[in-house]
Length: 358
Ligand SMILES: [Zn+2]
Image 1 (tube, helix red, strand yellow):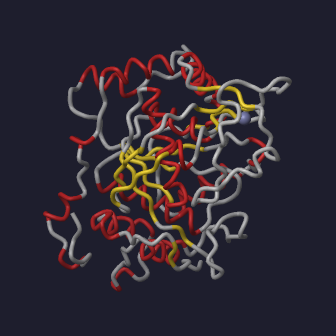
Image 2 (spheres, rainbow, N blue to C red; image 1 turned 90 degrees about the vertical axis):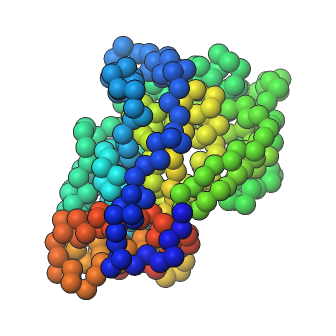
Image 3 (cartoon, rainbow, N blue to C red; image 1 turned 30 degrees about the vertical axis):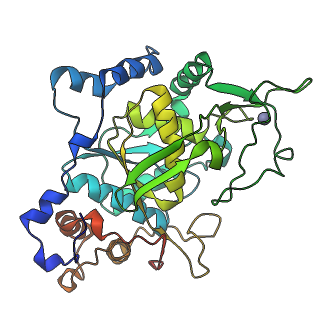
């Protein structure tokens, strides 16, 4: 449902009801729980929380959202917008909000960055639930998932180097489409480097709560993608799918730069028998040159003082500008107002918005 106007003065109980999760659209079949057990079969892994819920309570699982930064540097105003949207969507639904450090790519991680991120989230009032999960401790679960794919012939070794793939065509996102060189076996003398997923032809359709109905033929537009990299690190796509299911994530709210990762993740979810969360991709924050704010574009770190002004700008970037009477409010007061007025329908569709200046 699209509201005619996101007018906060007209906020009513009817609007509040629209923020409730649509549980009927989530699927948690029994087959999934068996598969989760298999994927997380290592005895050292924590018990899957979705399992105990399913046994004790026939109701669907409660809203569980997450924020998953990479500790490659401090958060910047762009990452605040994504964290804030995810936090507000969870809190407005009365749900949990988990924190996962995506530190798979060890060479890119920066010592101390994870602690800095925690301090930044605390300064902005974005409190998380439970213990922080570090992907660097989860290799056994990713290995189990990859083994399951291999056992079903869905993953195969690839010997291609970056140079060998340099002539492959690119998709609209600028990624090289894998031409399937190693799909039917390695060429004589070739040495396996990475592992790729064998993607079946067909369109993956999904609903994004902000962007609407979308679809992609992953086989045509991406090709067989990497699930374990040549440097032996597990690929982001595999890890995020395994972790979202293991943590019982029902709702992913993240930056629009990850929008076209969603069909790939859904392919993996289907193959592994895991549920697909609901997805919402919020606009990216760009700098004056139109570049996404990131470490590469020298985005400034989120300051630990003057947080209210930065938070107000982030709320405005999400289509929820605080009213004038909240000028001078604390972060907690701003978040309280925003949580009561959150409507994801009011988040702008554009993938680039004005930079909130700290
Ligand atoms: Zn190859």
